[in-house]
Amino acid sequence: MLRDGAAYLASLKGRQIYEAGRLLENPAEDSGTARTAQFIAGLLNECRSADSEVSENGVLLAYKLASSSDDVRARGRAFAAIARRSGGLMGRSPDFLATILTAWRGAADSFGEYADNVVRYWENAGQANLVLTHAISDPPADRHLPADAKGPLRTLRAVRETDEGIVVRGAKMLATLAPFADDLLVYPFRPLAETEADQALCFAVPVSTPGLTLYCRPSLARRDVGDHPLSAVFDEMDAICVFDDVLIPWERVFINQDLTRANNLRAATGMTAYAWHQSAVRAWIKAELVFELANSCAKVSGKAGSDPVRQQLGELAGIAESMRALVVSAEAGARQDEHGHFIADPVPLATSGMLNATLYPRAIELLQLVVGSGLIMHPLTADEAEGSPAHDYFQHYFAGVGADGVRHGRLLRAAADLALDAFGGRQMLYERLFLGPPDAFRAKFYDQYQAGRGTGGMLSCLLP
Image 1 (tube, helix red, strand yellow):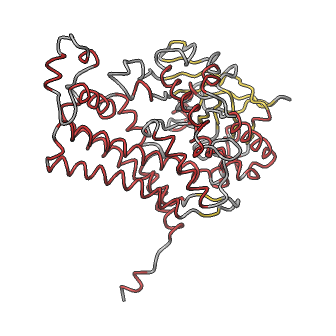
Image 2: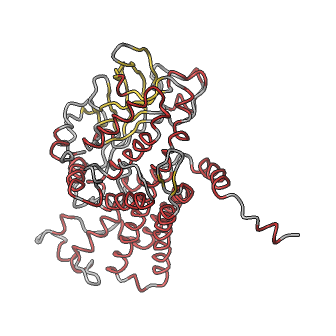
Image 3: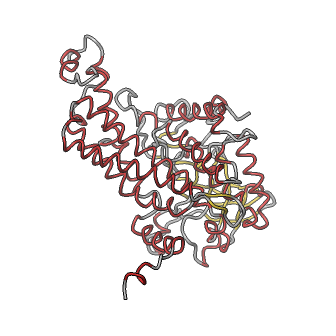
């Protein structure tokens, strides 16, 4: 039986986590993280009893290697069920890294002498229902600044080997969900040069490991859940992970200072198709959330009969349907990869990621246009209580079509959380940069499309 939420919450103690300069002693109890931890615990509980999300051997479908197109579609349905619980707002729900790890398992031979480590870790992670995230980006000094600007804290690297494992030192960022994760998967994000072999690493490490410290940005969840219904629950946090001579046991090492394997990790394992499937489903569900929120606000306020608002809602509906259609196309085009396992067609998946970088910000702009001034001026939870100074007036002023002022106020607060607040800004930036710099990804997609689709030879028929 998969681990339950209570066991997960109990495991969050004993970590070295700082949030805005303050030691966060227990994410399960701190006001800035407790509700997110409780949500993840509830997610683990719900997945245990959801037949559509668990395979025949009792582990999440995200950990199952697909042997048919039906298996691919089943995995997509499981992704959608998990995403709907957060409206797609949790970019690092546990199924995301589970898919990457499953891709590695399916291509275990690509890891050479460490192949058995990958297989065993994948088995253990699935059976334990681990909450995983990754830490893959490098500090700015190693990405953009000249060599003489680099200080003592540089990107993660191996500093020595022992009988027990490899010792690593340095930093990785931007680890979303890190305070809530059981383990970090660490691997390179950018291509490494010949002089960077000590950074050519891939391993799994528990967040509670001695010498590993997380430095988190300020929480966006330390606010009343009634006034901030989305950010108070779904702020998954981001962190810089600092390794101070951390020992990585040999059984958790997957690549050790091997430039060829590190630089070929994505191509050799096909992990992007696995990860993009989950993220494309989540983008579709998130687009539906924005539409549903805008549509509900428009109906309650009486704006839904206005032609300009109907046009805006129509565009939002088109965004949601486009994201859904790309998932359907990808799953319909499922095929066997070079390792003998079925994957969704990566071209529609890449299209989803590329378009979502611009369509999601557009969806939020449309939400702002539909809701308008209600994003700024709306009742708070304090105004809902009978006897509060503004209660009677707000009940009358915000009374809408089929809803009283309380219901309308709650819709407006949710819309403001997503369209106007720091949480919403972070969500937009996340989607813009999810696949890296958008311009660079569009150029990569051009190459992928050429290779995956080629040309139909139409011009030779149409032109002399």
